[in-house]
Length: 142
Image 1: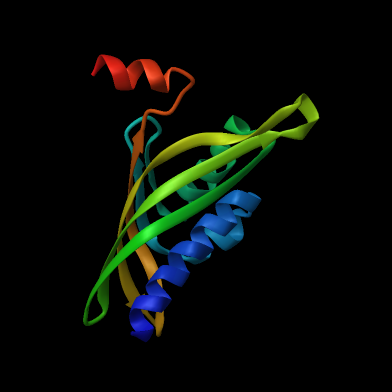
Image 2 (image 1 turned 45 degrees about the horizontal axis):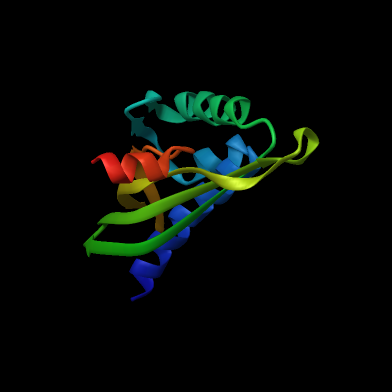
């Protein structure tokens, strides 16, 4: 059970570091050759690519952002693991009068490896779902 908890904790540290814009803490939970992929944003590889990604996210969300994750499913096989979970991103910008709102939703699919006793993310795929003001319209016209 501890491995599963540690895998979820590693992913939570990624979310926390991204929300704070802390590129050093963010790359600390990834392998040196890690790959981060999301269709609208593209692929970021290695620690330098992840630093670029962290900066890009904070340029897109100039106020504040918080990730929440749920429904974690973790499969551990020896020194490798797979984590799948749902993502909800809350964004706001108090300086511009933008109240907290759902800015994104989706799903994470992560591959991790144990290195020197610690779990590291080797690959993180993000599937984002469309979120917007026209939700009622989209639900009734589908």
